[in-house]
Image 1 (cartoon, rainbow, N blue to C red):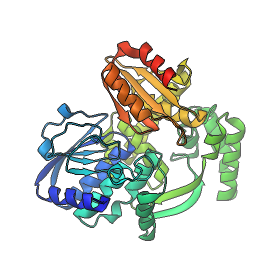
Image 2: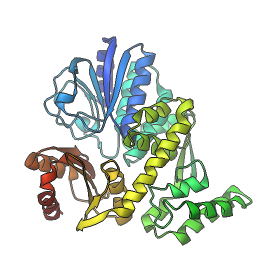
Image 3: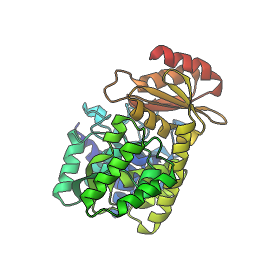
Image 4: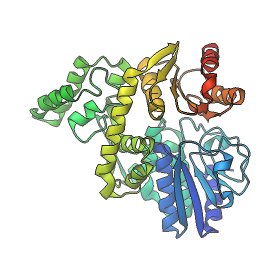
Length: 399
């Protein structure tokens, strides 16, 4: 069965219902997927209830016969057959209504996100091509490539004047100061979190005579003042994407805002922006920037506890600290954070790494208890606090 056939099968099933319950992951890809799907449901006159969660197991789903899972569910092997799964993680679920690139031999790691899968379902429900900009949020949020189905969807969107391609500075922010001081990906050592120096650089750049001169001065000031890695410095500038139909038109900024709102405990704000509610944009930006400052502080305070392993101070920022470290250090990293009841684990590896963190986390969950999974190079989970030392030893052995 092709992806289009899987999408059509799910769309037909959804049309048979007057009401569904949607569960979605709380990161950028999950929120974008939920926005795409629920806008399409609304247009098809299908009522819905939407909930965002950091993880999901079988017992969390109250009514599987009415439930749709976005960016979740594929890793759960024992769901009832009546459930709908729109996901790109490694599939263990054996249900008939499941769209997942991995089931079709397509690389779900880099060639199609949950937002992309939701887009295919949305277009099987009706003409929802105007939602293609949100697929770009899933691509950026999950560090995917513009290849395969991603390239087809975005290429069509560019052709339909929904997305405009350009070149520019890829630092999210409404102002130059905000771009520098709240920089997370890339993380600008000596500058991220430094409001005073960011203001000085912004003032210098104000006096430039052209956009080209502004960009050149901004980048040169950052390069001189920051101790960021070569990889992070090189990722400050490049191909940009203007989402012409979205509340936040810069794709990198849109992704950063949605992702941070979700992880800050305000997925409702991220969803509002993704669904096109312009009245919530300022509140979403403020929430996102406050959370990004938390991430920067956590990254600075993270303590190395073993080779490739760090301990972070906040559960809610652990995954973002792991994202910062894998980009800056260009090696596999595992970031831990102690919650009140569990040990949060976020594991990341460069795209060309030979490690398989999805399998490592699944194995750890089976060995120690808890839950774990994800992608080969982007995985995580929650394990019992008591297993911390033994888990660190197992990571060292694995790597």
